[in-house]
Length: 317
Image (cartoon, rainbow, N blue to C red; front, side):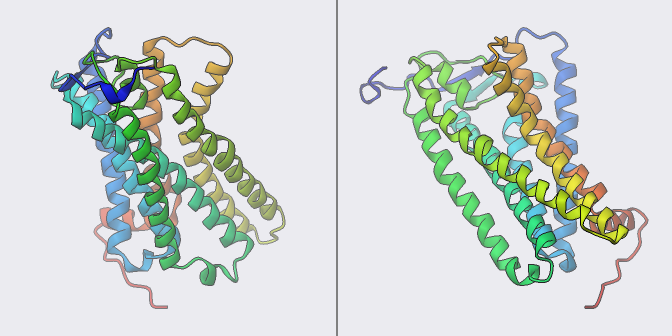
């Protein structure tokens, strides 16, 4: 391994070359642009509805609001680079812009994982302890836990970013489609293998810890559904669980596909790796607001009222 203390970065910018071998780059660019616009629109609508309606200032909606903020950050850091490369044909990204984009991209990935865990906890407390829910899960505690997940993300991803920032770069070429840890490591003048140990270790927690925990919570919820005698309550619980499971699998599925193919010894070419990367980066932020807008009654009602120009009548408690 190169002695990083004696090396100096000698690149001021990187050139994104991950799309160079593709035909119809403009078409792909427009698809990504439309997807990004839908992501911003969907998450923006959810944010506006929740922030402007004080009756939605409750823990579950605060968590949805947090997820919307994460999705906007997560998708923006990668989409803007890809749109710039494909449509504006600006392939050059300055060194510090690339490092900062990498930081916020992985921060979004980390905080989304934590956000899904908090939402699973919220649901299991609401269903298993309905009478104590409002005393256990308060707005202030929800905001506190959200802030703690962001703080953890800032620290963990800061460590990862410092590793990438400390490497020597002697070739200003990124073979992937935007700036992220793997693409920067492979562009450095070092043996990349030792530097992949850190992200692999960090990925063990969400894959082997948080994901099984979330699945267990929904198994408990499924068991709780079978115990309900009221059909209306049962359908409401099923509807809530289905919404969360759709969001959960849209986030974890691409990651598991990539890991499974690697473990089976399948060698992915650059195009296939980039396709999985784009899917993992754009599909969850697109699905999340759609799911919560359609399947959450309060948000759906307010969207319909807004389109029909109905005045929202406050509900007095």
